[in-house]
Image (cartoon, rainbow, N blue to C red; front, side):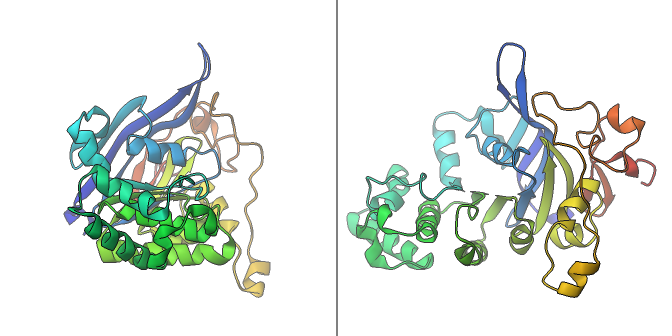
Length: 325
């Protein structure tokens, strides 16, 4: 039962605004709340610009919050100081979107992977450090000899494996995976995803997996949250979200995923959204999706819908369901 699962990270009414000028702010994340359970992978999906990366980075303290609270094991992430921050960065690591810019080209692979171990004093000798680095390279599907090379000698998929090894070097509990496959060739995306699934199970990692590829998110995630224009609009178990989506935006997203069956693909109806995505600098009043929603009524443009649990563990923020609870 979900009630018995331990909450590792709790996000409460999180806001992250970026100041544009003296009068305007870009509302990248606006009043988002969710929990991440120990040992699970929570997928966060949405169109480009919906705030999912900003949400993830604010959750782990890369960005300062504007308002709200993020608790990791009950401790406020944005109130940590000194040794608390150092300990937090040991437990929480990030895998970046771009394997080309996230690795220092001046360092050899060994030094890239060992840097975290050196900072946190996790190895007693150079010999132990070398062994740990070589073991990590084997775990991510690379050869131990690669430790002496520079990153420019590797392909994008291999570089991302080096990035994964670097994140794992400090034995983290939590991984933020920020679109880790979007910069890779399609041919290697599945390999990296399968590697992450394998490592998550072997190490009992808790993951927050951010992506816009919904089919990949379904494969790796236990639960999935859908974001639109800075808001979380739906959150549910992965299988349930894909089989029975409730929010009109989620339904439209899922209808755009190709089905590898020509007959089914011909028969099904794709939901086409009208209008443009509003600016996060000046979002619409009420529901952010109201100007594109085929079911919108007058209340949608007046009142922001609250997140409601419509089924066990299935939350949705939509006025359609106000009277159905």
